[in-house]
Image (cartoon, rainbow, N blue to C red; front, top):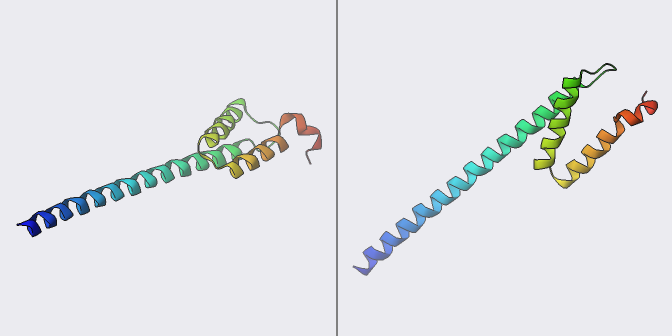
Length: 97
């Protein structure tokens, strides 16, 4: 009798553990998909601001993409992002080659 109770509890705990681990992996996969979408949007927006005469909507798209990266990126990525946006800033146009 006691063995049956113990094995039933073990089965319940094992299935609950499996559900918890599965949900954690699903959340991680969803998060990675969202991050990938943000990075893809950033690179798409960055390619839209290349050239001398950049349309205003391309600048807005780029600014939104940069702001979105602030939500998900690591500290190192944000530092590099700031360096690159400072490099391409309108105020730095005199040093463009």
